[in-house]
Length: 211
Image 1 (cartoon, helix red, strand yellow):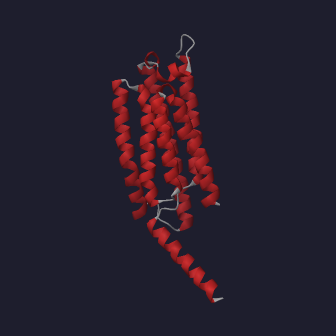
Image 2 (spheres, helix red, strand yellow):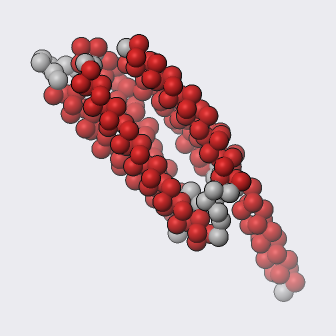
């Protein structure tokens, strides 16, 4: 009986320490939905690029052909990216708020602020770089850069939340490097990294921590 009480006390202490040093209210379902948004956005982007074609293009030409990227197309693609980002952030904040409330953990406590800072620095730097690449016309590098900087952001944030986030970050970086080697397939890698990997990661997180 005493051993059981000691084990329960130790479990309670570990739980309290984890709550004070880790943000454990990330929602797995938000990851799944973010992946769905990304896949929908990638499909819409492909349809916009496909509609611009006056002849039969390969997927390499669709992803990297400069002729396809006129001002109208760029604006439409940027709009899609912003909508996907806003939907993903709003969904993540809302579902994490609900989970934090259930866990008795503040959504904007010290740990969550540290998480946001470590995640936002690579994201802001990467976003700035991508805008420069977009302005200079280096369209084929934008998808690899987005994957790599997002992966770095996840690894930085993983110190303040579930370690599973670190593995997602590593996968995103590897995908980004592969996309840099095959720039004509940037849209495919982007859809896989932000879409498929998010759905897989979110599903694992949901069944592992949310149920």
